[in-house]
Image (cartoon, rainbow, N blue to C red; front, side):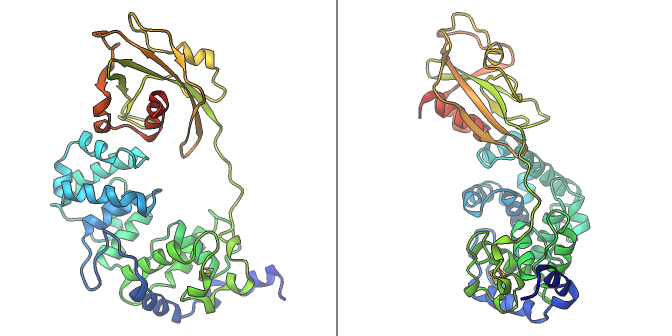
Length: 366
Ligand code: SF4
């Protein structure tokens, strides 16, 4: 059996770019493509608005989670011009629950730019698309390929996995990205670039999964280096993960009858412009006593009650642990400056991030 080093040398990109792969992939796609709400039916032309909207929503979120949000958005704003005419508040409210709110802000900024600067038509090149807010290299390539059939291969985590296995790429991510992009491009058919990309996306999502890939069903299995070595699950190679430092803080849930005290976070920064209950700073090594001193001050407030347990949430760069306190305010108590009362029954209309939903559920014991 050859050593891993020998395999690494043998499997240079040039030696492994089988011309049969693009056709095998497309044939498989024609038989097994996923039906997705944003995807054009076979033979239909893709709608750039739907492709763009789905790609933005799918960044760091699953297809299952995105489905209902996508349907709600296109029902309310059927094209990019309509979305560009909406208010940011409405867009954030509709987005609430999908997470990563900077994406919703960029989504809106992009819709405004396309409506205002491009007459409501998305640019049809990667370069033109990348000039728009919230569209990075991957999304630009995905829209260019799927909506405009530009011959380019978008490479996301799913595609990185398939390609790194197919070619047994020994180099670790993220350094391996340029090589993986180069190898992924060899899987593009001469025409139907969008379908080649979607075929690879579907293969990664349904067959070449992170654990237990279904290699026996894979159209590329006879030509897969990782399968030949029985090392599929070890790809892609990755440097050990560094997780962010745990931050801690306190959240204060004040009820006045059936209303709750909330405020709006500053426009810039984490969860910018979203609604939250008052809280302390979120700091590594935050002391519970110090955090509690940041509780809002209201006249005639009952004693703070600490709820048992903590609320945990993981942001991209750090995990968070919140202690939750509750208190009751008397009828007609005025909200402190910068805060307001909202009826608990209308909380669903607020742009509440998931972490705050968890805090309120914990406080109200729902
Ligand atoms: S044969 Fe298996 S590991 Fe290789 S690409 Fe197909 S599903 Fe992935």
